[in-house]
Length: 161
Image 1 (cartoon, rainbow, N blue to C red):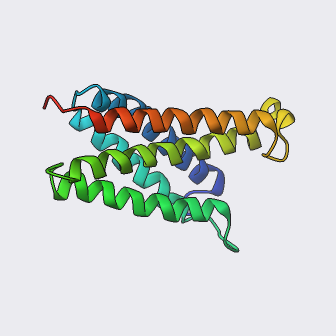
Image 2: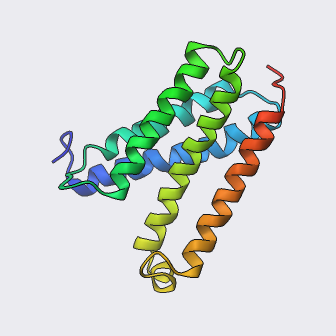
């Protein structure tokens, strides 16, 4: 039991938070890149992404895994994003720091989504059972390129607050 939930229930909560964070990020960050500020959607994105990351640490951990490494990096990146946004109000360099760290946060959450999809969805797993076959590499490469393009565009825009 974790937080009074069975492992499957807790996993469902963790995945649900992740999906909400991804959906909110896919709304808030492109809007931000287009110069539109969405404070509520941004807050939902950051809070649910942070909750996803933190709940990931509550799963039974026997040793260091790539998932744990991604969680540690995600926590640090999210902390920087939160300080840039709520501590510095996106003033000065905090705007570009927020833009980069928020984009990385969304990327990491989606990176894990792709990894989990290839592990858990039978059709995808059949295409890339080891996680290093071309379909998996292509999916991760497309995600990385999209994240870089989104982050680059967002750093070039002025916000219409």
